[in-house]
Amino acid sequence: MKANRTKKHREGFILVVVLCTIIMLGALLFGFNGESRDNLLAADALKISAQALSCAEAGLNIAMAALKRSDAERWGLMGLLIGEKEIALADGTCLVTVCEESGKLNLNLLKTSEGTPDRTRIDQVLRLIDLLNRSDLHNSTIGYGLIPAIIDWIDSDEETTSLAFVAHDNRGAESDYYRDLDPPYRCKNAPLDITEELLLIKGITPEVFERIRDYVTVKGDGKININNASQLVIESLSENMDTALARMIVIRRREKPFSSLAELRDIPGMTAVAYQAIKRVATVRPQDNYYQITSRGSAAGSDQTIVTLIQRKANANKLEMIQYKEL
Image (tube, rainbow, N blue to C red; front, top):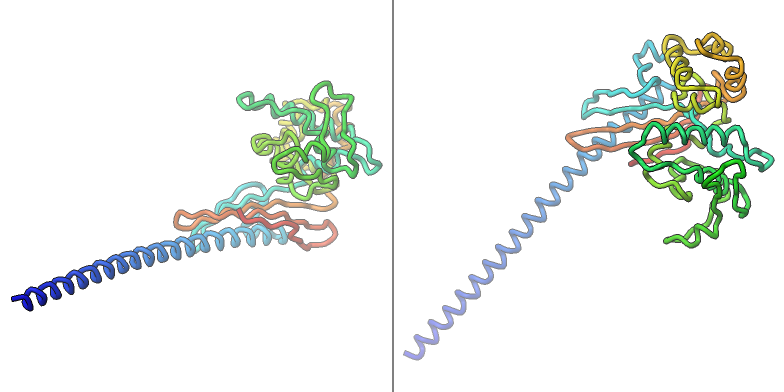
């Protein structure tokens, strides 16, 4: 009897061990299946993301082809050069925007080569700030202080700039200001390389940056291309320029781009004073052309965006990629 009980206990123990082993194996198998499923989903997401990036790269290549070709219109690419264009691809779509930087205010030129503030260009940015504040009353006011702060960021000294001709918010910032931030860093004291660098400068919050980014650049000779500048930039060029006159210039160039600045004199409402002021700061033929290409690729619900800065020299039909960023 005792032997039978021992045998039964042994069999029961073995059964428990077998059941525990089965449960453990089941748990391991369940975990393995879950991990495999997660890996498959991750691989599928990576594949879709790669397809979206390929679509964005395709859009970038198409835009560069449009910039290279003198016969862009015949190839159906002219739409890229005048705004936003959606292109259907085999694996998805891409939305391409080409923006010529010569139609924007160059912030690296707020100081002259002699190291003094450039009053003409500073006044242009001051007027742009006023126009932006008036056009969007729902957002907080953009302060004038970002101008001396930009000047201090791009100049080579550690002397804080103060603009006597600005009544309020007229002081910049040097390294002593930035070292007290968290994390601390030094004032660059060199020209801006990309517009996103503005986010490091005193007074330029992400909100302010989003409001000004389409109107400013860090490239070019500072002459504003009247054929592609926005209405706000055109209006900021002179105190003698008003909204109606800036709008008339935009309407006129839609019919036919200006071939010379002299044609501006035929615009209704253009005064001799306004024309002379624009003539000093504008052009219809930039020395070097800079283009910002934004290409957003989409595939199966996934989006990938590429932003690049392209330079094309006026004396050579050659493109050079200066900046490349995947967002």
